[in-house]
Image 1 (cartoon, one colour):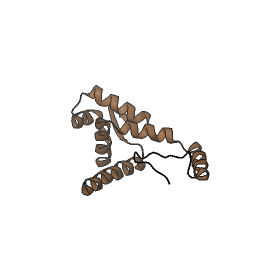
Image 2 (image 1 turned 90 degrees about the vertical axis):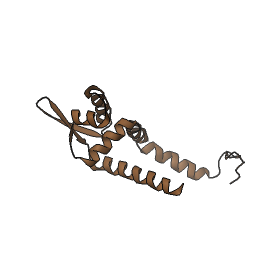
Image 3 (image 1 turned 135 degrees about the horizontal axis):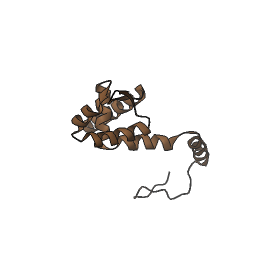
Image 4 (image 1 turned 180 degrees about the horizontal axis):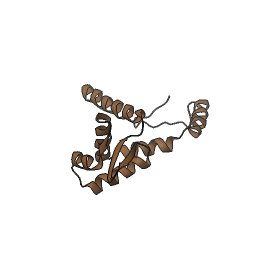
Length: 124
């Protein structure tokens, strides 16, 4: 492939067959939803909440607020965002709300991301 010094292609397409195949594959996948999932976890407080729920199966909103150092209202806001994206689920017990991860895939994603970050530091 002919690449200039600023890492941009000087030709329109090197392998049009690959491009066509990949574009068709992208149409079948739900990558918009995947991007939204990662966007939801990209906030540091929501990442902390998700990590905490990886460590503990279930946490009350008030405990989550204490963990991230926020008000219950702020923690609830973050939890609503995580819930909308299918990252957490909740159950009510009287006036209390307990949150947990929606499924094991979320835990796998977060732990893989943490491992990736640790390996990246080892390469520096």
